[in-house]
Each structure stands twice: as structure tokens, then as C-alpha cells.
Amino acid sequence: GIQVEQSPPDLILQEGANSTLRCNFSDSVNNLQWFHQNPWGQLINLFYIPSGTKQNGRLSATTVATERYSLLYISSSQTTDSGVYFCAVSLTGTASKLTFGTGTRLQVTL
Amino acid sequence: DADVTQTPRNRITKTGKRIMLECSQTKGHDRMYWYRQDPGLGLRLIYYSFDVKDINKGEISDGYSVSRQAQAKFSLSLESAIPNQTALYFCATKDRGGDEQFFGPGTRLTVL
Image (cartoon, rainbow over all chains, first blue to last red):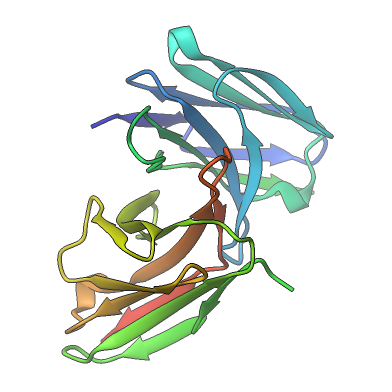
């Protein structure tokens, strides 16, 4: 099956800093989603981005499908950004079954 | 009100007990999914359903069964719970013509 690798596994930032999270995947995908799992366990949709670039406030994401990677940018980080960030992908013809990476755990400190 | 709800939110049970986790959605989506998350890992797919009559096994279906009672309801059962089924369980939905999956709040299950 498809492999999804995320880096770094852990990240500690001071409030106000910027960061880049990376997701590499091993096959061509027709769906790529970024999620934020908050400290209470809830999964929050951030982006649907199988290709191209999107921005939403302080967050933006870029997927280069031909090179099989996606990047999530967090600017001016806040303590509420803490949690785990997951990348998940699905292949064409697989009923949209998502395969998740193991996540990047982000801690934003004051 | 939440679009995807899961009950119960937390459950502690004993080895060998039968337990059912329920998922309901008001999004009108036809596709529904059950995933489990183990500590420090991403989610893995247990079962998925395209409609009431179409149910399919996912990556880790052994020890689980499901029922799609209606388009809006998808239940996951553990016939005889075991400790390594202790995990966080998520239900998700997707519209056939849509792009994204949307997740419920999760059920934290502990099997003693």
C-alpha cells in the first residue's frame, strides 16, 4: 500500500515563530488532506489539497503532486496551534480510503 | 449542532464483553467510515460503507463488525472486546461527489 511519511515527528516553537511541516507519499494520489488534532483529540479539517497552493489565515499548504510531497506552513504560531498535524492521502479508485501519516506533534510555548 | 456525532464519547469495558459504538450524521453524505487511532500513530481504516447495502472491510477489520442501519447511521461492534482494542475510534463521512472526509469527535474506548 501507499506509504505516508511526515517530518519532523516533533516540533517545539516559541509563540510567534514560523514552521514548515512536510508530508511525503509514495504513489500518485487523488486526495490529500491536512488535519489538526487538538489536545482534546478532535480532528479538524485544515486543507483539501491534492495539488497546488491554498491559504487560510496564518496557515497555507502546497502540494507538488509530481514530486509526491506536501508542505504545511504555519506563520506567527500561537499556543492554540499546539497538537498533532496529520497528512492523509487516498489513491484513485480506492473508494477515498484515507491513509494517514504518523503525524507531527507541535508544541507552541509562550 | 455537530454534523457528525459519536456515542458514547468514552467507554470502559472488560475483556470478553460485546460493545457497540454509534455514529450519526446530518450532512446527508452517502459514504461513512470507521477508523481507529492508537497512541502516537495515525488513523487506520476498519470498515467503510457506500450506502446501506454496500459495506466493505478496511485495513484492520478482524475482531470488528459494522451495521449501516440507515444512510445517516453507521455502527461499529466489538463482539468480544480484548485489551489491544483499546484505542480512540473515529467515524467519518464523505459525499460521493465531494472531496473531503469529515470526522466525528471520537470515542475513547478502554478494554480492561
